[in-house]
Image (tube, rainbow, N blue to C red):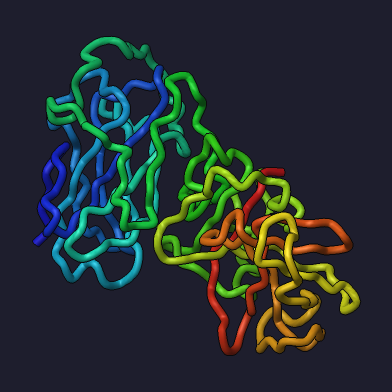
Length: 330
């Protein structure tokens, strides 16, 4: 059975998810509602904390959910948090996370993607030393070093919440919205990866309104630091490789700034699925991705212009890997 304990770090041998809710100063809640879902199934029924409303609750707040070990299998789950004031949901947020057997996995949720429009006075100074269980949350942003999910320090008090960029409000890559306000990796249901062919169809619905499927030129100008961060379940994020012709040969490098020798040459004008040969050919299904796990260590050159953090990924056949989809602000 699933059980929960508020604001207390789970023992190392326990399978658990630590949900960390963050929101900017000036946004006050008197309760938070925490939930865990896999698809349509509730892994943990929504819990309202504290049980008796108390205003305001300073950011961050955390809540540890203990899980059965077998829930570590079956793919990502989604952490959901609602910010409640006067019994009304004011802001909500969610984030996919991979459960790891016998470990406590952090899941950072930034509230603010769905705002009910309910306004009211915020008293950010009252009771500012208390959280949902009368305990300080401690180092709520300190992730498990063995996991891919590494929440960053809370945003400065007056920093606005950046848009998710994903239609469902949940980023799978570029997790620090302050560092990456204009780019995001987005997944399908519960943060699942997809083939390039699926990405072509899904791009219009996965990106938030006012965002679009990124091209390599929008990624290549980003600096090598900070790292984009990612949830578990994927290592790459598809880029829009459409519009190429067979003569458009791209060179890939295993170093940033297109340094060193060419590691591979290919064209992205091939089909959206299928096998990939070593020689440049329009019969190959090579496409471009943001190499999240090799950020700052790879690059490609197209028409003598170098684009950092970008690599080839086969869209089908032997060696194919599903990726998330990269969305950029219009």
